Length: 153
Image (cartoon, rainbow, N blue to C red; front, side):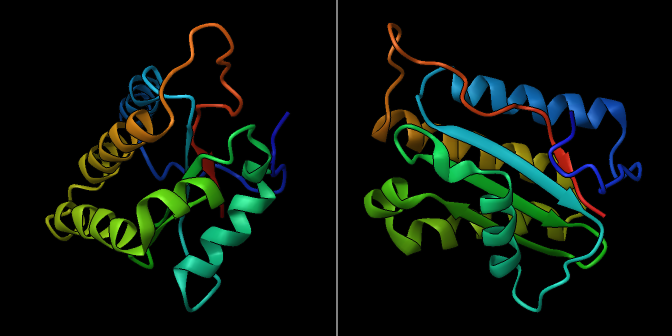
């Protein structure tokens, strides 16, 4: 069942690129109870990509994780816009400067047209931070959100 059934995947990434990003998510989540999701679309319908990331975050019900430690990596490829949005508890612990630095990390890769590398690098960085702030709990940890990339229009 698709979360946004009206969105259609438009070959924004190759199957190999998708696998690389999903693998990065799975590796990052192995050491944390936090959750990472990636949402990729062609164009951003908002002027501010953070506003779109917030809309997607709540549309994917990412605020419903037990520890409120979900992080969304949002990318609009053709519009060359991106944002990273974290839930309340992770925001309290890392602050706004952390997210700005993470976006800068992605932009460094994106400016060299290394989109997948940029997404994977930020997933790794966010995963390390989540592992520090929300360590893996072997007895009660569960994968609360799917690891697959969500594609928008």
